[in-house]
Image (cartoon, rainbow over all chains, first blue to last red; front, side, top):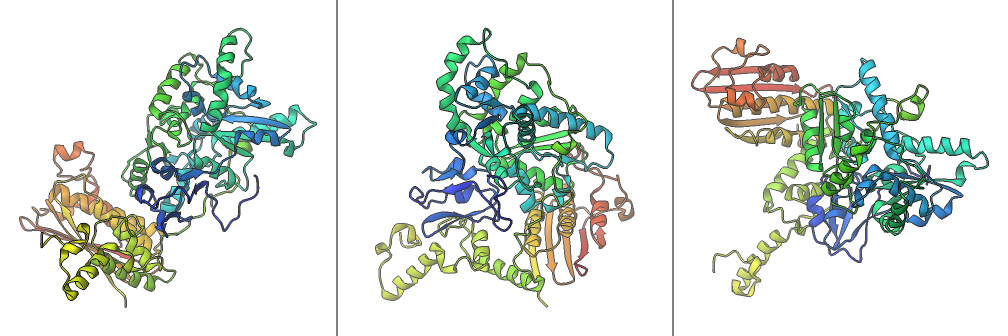
Amino acid sequence: MRNNHDNNQIFHSVTLDPDKCMGCVTCVKRCPTEAIRVRDGKASIIGEYCIDCGECIRVCPHHAKHAAYDTPDVIKRYRYSVALPAPALYGQFGNLESTDIVLNALVAIGFDEVFEVAKAAEIVSDYTRKIMEEEDNLPHPLISCACPAVVRLIRVEYPELIENLHRTVPPVELAARMAVRKVMDEHPELTRSDIGIVFITPCPAKVTYMRSPMGLDSSEIDAAVAMKEIYPKLLEHMPEIAETYETSLPELQSAGRMGVSWCGSGGEATALLTESYLAADGIENVVHVLDSLEEERLGDLDFIELNACAGGCVGGVLTVENPYIAHTRIQKLRKFMPVSLNHFECGQENLIKDDKPLDYVDYVAVQKLSEDYEEALSLLERMGEIEESLPGLDCGACGAPSCKAFAEDIIRGKAKQSDCIISMRDQLLQLAEKEGISESFIPRPFRTGEQE
Amino acid sequence: MPKLHFRYEVDGDDFTRAGEASSKLKQSLKQLGLSPQLVRRAAIAMYEGEINMVAHADGGVIDVDIDTVAITIVMKDTGKGIEDIGQAMKEGFSTASEEVRQMGFGAGMGLPNMKKHSDYMKVDSEVGVGTTVTMKISIADE
């Protein structure tokens, strides 16, 4: 799956099943970037605005929204496959005595090797601590780049904050890079295409990252399998593995408390051993924090960790368990873990840093109404007039999330004023009056109520 | 010459709503395709003004005019007025109540920040009558 993203076409992993979509406006209303419209009775996503956060998948009552990911069978495509479990995976199972049971179950279902993302996370943490201490010209505050939905959101809505993004690859990418090196070293008989680096992902945003990584030309991750798909397969093997635990089980656990804690909100930030941090989770909170930061309202901070999902990665839409339950389980699991098992080593800089300097994520001014400023001024004025003439109910029946968004759609030529059913009601009433038809013949929601 | 006018009403004593007007303006400026730096400056200047209106003047009215030359923000209140404008403009000077400070406001940076982020600022105030702050942010060199 590497090297296949088109620069002009933004890849998205959130897709729609038109057979299941009823054309209701649940997703339209909940989308944090107002990227969804109902057109011809079906929801459709505006690619430029979508940040792949997966909120629409979460809220769709008809299960019509899906994430594109690989099935667990993908490992058969490779001669040698490596599983990259995100630490959130450990929170999916109850009564787990050790993460080793999950890691060995991954081997039992067919992976040749396991490389914990938590291990790479510890290296990223150590590296970040180091540069925060040593480098004077770091952006202040530094914003985590671990949540790809947040990075995309910053790219779409907060271009001024792009320079604050931490210039490392996310832990999953570092894990992939390290795993590739390790396997190539240990198995000289294999070529790169024989090796499958398979990420066990909690969310669609990370699938998108793999397909079109921001700040990189290409990702070393070859496939992404949803946590919820691998979950039942692991469950089949886990009871048996748990029985042999402590006697004959190979020790695969390679990360400590710090790495595993990245699964929840605040985990990444606390690993930096500074009090001067802010960790926010849930897309509404993320938006609020970014607004405040953009307007210089947050005061002095060293680090900002932002997770689009409530609870952090354990809240990913491709996980099985409730985020807070999963987090509590991980809390218990990590109790007997060492603090950290991995450290940044000199020479790892080129593995940990992103490829593209400075213009890390190109600012895409998707919001502007026209390239010509004067024209944009008149369009915005017209938009205000249209909005004024609309009922202001934000009912969504036109397919847009609000009357304001609808007015913008009209200006952009994506909708017609006659798409508003409330305006249609007024026309209907006028017609009824002209024809001398009593209001009682008109459906109740369309009546003005004056004649009741 | 095309010209755009917005009016925002600011509610007094409701800190939960302070920032609504500046966030709406920010959205509009982004739609105009103005540079992120300029959008940020306008949003900060207006937000600080909004907070002042809420904290000191029991709300007021903001008029924003945008044309091809500048963004002009006029913030008008009928609050208690500023006794000594020179002193109020000094960084760190604050008359905010303890209650307001506990909410993280009142650091005495409001007016200085407004001045810093605008190209022109004028404060007219009369004790007991009210305050009008006029700010201009030039977009000519955009």
